[in-house]
Structure formats: C-alpha cells, structure tokens
Length: 305
Image 1 (tube, rainbow, N blue to C red):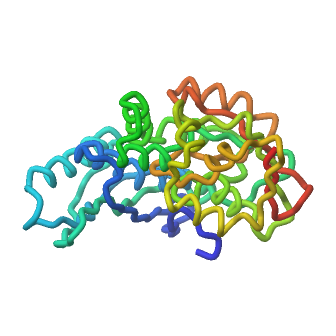
Image 2: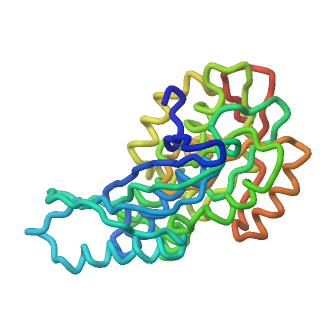
C-alpha cells in the first residue's frame, strides 16, 4: 500500500497468492453496453498489471432506478458480462445501490505465483519502457461529451478502452528481465511513471516522439479540449517532471492526460525489450512502443525529451 500498487496481493502458500482489486467509475461514453465493457476491462487490468490471472468478479453498481430506464442498466451489465466471458472470468455476484448518477465496475480476484508478482517499482538503470496502448482517452472522452470528436476517433478510442490487456500481460509474464509494471489509468503516463521512480535512485527519460496517441487527439489538445483531471495531474506531478523544448505543449498535455482502461507500462531489461515489443504487437497491441528508458541520472525525476 505504501507504493500505490495496482492491487493487493495475499500469499496463501509457497506457490500461490491471491490478487484483489476494485475499480468503478461514472460513464465516460454514452452507449451503456460500451460503458460496461470499458469499466470491466479497466478493473481487470489491475490484475494483469500485477502479473496475475483474474478468476472471479463481483459487480459494483450504482444506478438511479427511478430516473433512468432499467434497459440502460441491463445493457451496462451485459457489456461487463461479455467482457468477463472474454477474459474467462466468472461473475459470482455483486452489490447495487440507488444513486443519482450511474456508476459501474468490478471487484476482481485473481491468482499469481508469489515469485512472479509484478510491482510498479523496481525499474533498473538501462531498462527500456514499453507502453502497450495509445494515449488520449481522457481528451477524446471530453471531446465526445462536447460533441467535438469525430465518429472515427470515438469508435477507435472506445475499441481501445474496451480491449483487454490480457494478451500483452501474457507476453510480459513469459519474459525474463521484467523489473516493474503498472497500467496507465487516471494519473496519466507521467503520473504513473512518477510512481515508478518516486523516492528511488533511478530516473526516467521519456522519448516523446515515440509515444503513441490516437489520431485526432493532437488537434483537440491544441484547441484546448482538455479534461480537468489533466490539469490536476500536471499540478500534482510537475515538480518531478522536466519537459524539454523538444516536446511540444500539446504532446505534454497528452502525457498528463488521465486514461481510462489504458495500456500496460513495463520496465524491461534492454536486451529483452525489442523481442518483447515484437511479441506484444503480434499478440494484438499493434501500436505498442518503446517510449523511454530508466537512467541513473536525475534520480527521482522524469525528463521528457
């Protein structure tokens, strides 16, 4: 808990530990089925980020039953259930309360070998940093709500958020030299990268030109369509981050953008990085990229070039 891990781990025996997590949020898209899929994928991602395999889940639901039709709730739950089935996770129950605003997510239980738990700390100088999904979901969701996003962008972003991190996680789990892993969610890439090296003797260099982002997000950022969470992320972490002039302002915004159901961010020994990247892309994460490196310079700080 001291290091803000993605999930909790409890060891049962020498060869088995359980992973527990819970995550839920308000709708970020209008379509209830898509919202259910995204919320479920987002919650399951915490188990994948810890190196585990999700087994069971409980629905967590808040819904204004007197104000919205039950068919909306039914579609949210159907979306979540279909995503759990895709992940081979068994839904074993849940809890619902009446609330003024819909909220949905999962409490997930998974398993992992105690020797294979991945933490968000432990990155070593010389490691390469791989990001498995493009950035920009927060900016895109803000534009979707404002009616400023193109249909192509909306469909692409929803498809990405609903995609499981299972295949990428499987490749990471089979690779030696993995020193740290997390998933990129509400704190943005730079916020989660700060967690990775905060209080350590290592630093991070982000290669901004290598960072994947959704086509169309740049134009939105340049016109100032930015979520409030992006500004909060920057205000909280900018003391640890130096952005060089080589990184334009719009791209720095994307690096701070809060993500929903974002990709995995993994620190891997340099000799394993290229092979792991090829396997992750072959497994379906076609836009995965090496976006930086861990350094012995600037300990506890991030430099974006």
